[in-house]
Length: 415
Image (cartoon, rainbow, N blue to C red; front, side, top):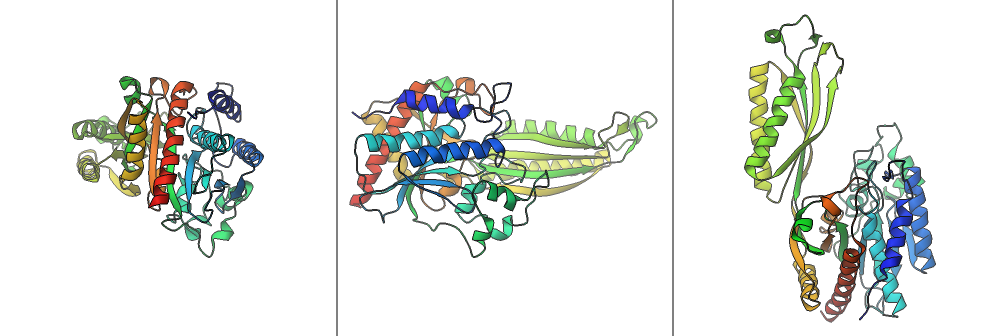
C-alpha cells in the first residue's frame, strides 16, 4: 500500500510557516508582499527540484506539471493558495499546495506513470487584499476577471495592481488580447483545505467531502446622518448615523438566525470618528452566506426593508451598493463518488459537508469537474495563529486524495 510521508509534509508546513511569521506567532503573508514573493520563490525552487515543468501565468498563478503517458490529455489539477490573511495561520491554503506536491512525489517515488499529466497550482491572491479582489488568480484563470477589469486597479496603498503582478512574475499586459482557460482544459480540480469551523471537530472525523460551496452576497451600505456637536444636541434632535447602523446590525444578526443562514458585518467606518461629534456618516459591509440563493435574497430583502424603516424613524438617508452576488456552487458528483468509494473501501470515517467559506474551487467548477476535501482544524480555528491540524488527519486525507487521483486517471481514461 502506498502512503505519504507525514514528516516531510509537516516539515514543509513548518518551513513555510516561518515565511512572514510575526512576533505573535501568526503569518503575515498577504498577496504581493515581500513574504509572498519569498514564499513563491521557495515553492518554485521546490518544484524545479522535482524536475517539474514550472510556469507562471499572466496573473501570477504558479503551475507545475508532471508529465503523463498521454501528455496532450488535460491535466488533473491539484492545489490551493499560499497567501495569508494578516496574522493568519500556516495551514490555510498552504496545506492544499503542499499536499499536491506530496502526491506528485508519491507518484515519482513509486514510479507510477499516469495517463493524464498531474499538475500543481498555487493561485494568486485567494485571500482578501488591498485591491479588493479576492480569489483573484482563479477568477482570472476562468475568465471572470479580464484585462479591462484589472489594468487600472489601484490598491489602498496607491500601488497599482499591474505593478504588484509584475513583482510576482505575472504581466497583465499579456492579458490584453484575452486570457482564460476553456471548459475541458483540465480533467478535474481537487482542493484540500482545513474546514475553518467546528463541524468536523464535533463529529470527530478526519475527512469531509465537500458537497457544495455556499453562495456569498455582500452589500456596501452608506448611512448618512447629520454631523453635530455631541454635547449641545439633545437626543431628540439627533440624526445619528452610527445609532442607525447599530440598529441595523442587531437586526441583521436576528434575521440571519431566524432564516437559518450566516450573516456578518465585519467592516465599518465612522465619519468623522471624533469623540465629541455625532457621527454624520457610517459605512458598513453586510455579508450573507447560504446554500440557498432564495434564503440569501429573502434575508437581503428583509434587511433592505429594515433600512427603509430606519430612514423614516431616525431621519437618516442610505445608499446601498452591491459588491458581490456569488451563486452557490455544487462540487462534481463524479469526483465526489470517487472520493466516497475510496473512503468506504479503505474504511475511512468521513462526512459530507457544505463549505461556508469561499475557495478557488468555486471558480474552477465553471470550467472543470471540481472537488474539495476538508480536514479538521483544532477548535474550529482559522485565520489566526492558533490554526492547527493534526498530521495524522493530513496524512489520511493525502492518501485518500492520492488514491482518488489514480482512480480518476484510470476511469476517465477508459471513458
